[in-house]
Length: 429
Image 1 (tube, rainbow, N blue to C red):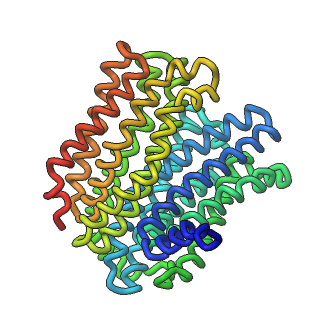
Image 2 (cartoon, one colour):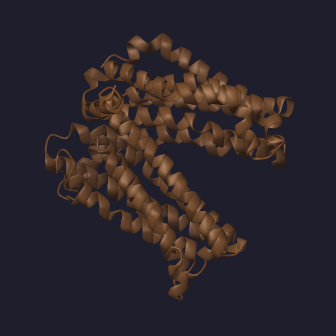
Image 3 (tube, helix red, strand yellow):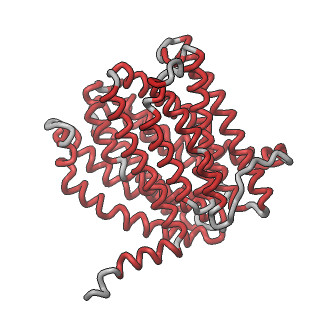
């Protein structure tokens, strides 16, 4: 009996050592968990040490920063997953990474300037961005966040998810002590914005060492020789991957707005809490799919086999959460308040069931992206987005927040049926 106990952990360690896709998937999910937990601690410190005005203004400014950075960088970041594994030399690898970093930095800077002008000066929504110090901090933070996103996806492409986990842990961890710096250094601007910008900038130092210690010993020093050629080579992929990722992300931003517009702000409180609980499902399959994207991009001929392994990994990781949510979802919702189970219980069931077709469509999109069929991936994501949004808009006044669950489940199921009917063509290299 004494020798049998460690068998399962040893088996898991052995599989992690030999299965880079599983290792990458777990690193991506761990990144989401760690950043969420440290983010909670950060905002708890802000709430306890500053007034609600500081906390609210800081949350609004950093939300705008993240949105601008993500929308600027997602195309370049996803293109790295597609192109870096296909590099034939270290110089070509560095040249392609340089293109991704420059595109993200320029996009982040332009996005930051637009937000500063529009929300800081024209509309006055974010007064913290009006002073020069606030504007500079915001733009720097946007650039650092965008470049960090590219490094994260490059780590995924290199099957070095630990670099992504380490960088994000450093970033979110540094924000907590850094949030007091503006109190010690007068004139540095908004304390929340300062901690984000400085933390994001310092976190970029970790990939410098992390990639050197990776399996291939990469250097991330920029290579500008042949920059124009690499940019032209990646241009179509940059645009295509950008729109595919945006189509996948937009529902998260649009659906709460639809609930407010078609029902009420109170209904959105119940919807948003339920949606966030369901987010565990929208974390697992995207993480595994991103890892599959990297694996299949390196060896497109093995995409079908990697997809089958991805389904198995997702099934193993989702089985327990699905069971817990179906049996105890009401109890989880009651943590938000006594009225939440009655309002969101059935919606949570619908979101739980949608995890299965959502996994199927995520796997298909990853294979299509990795095998240079970005247009098909874009059409699939866009069709599901339009279907979910249109059905939600039509049904919300009739069914309430459950309408979003039906619309989301219906759109994902339709997409999964199309994938099933087209799988032989999708899985073909």
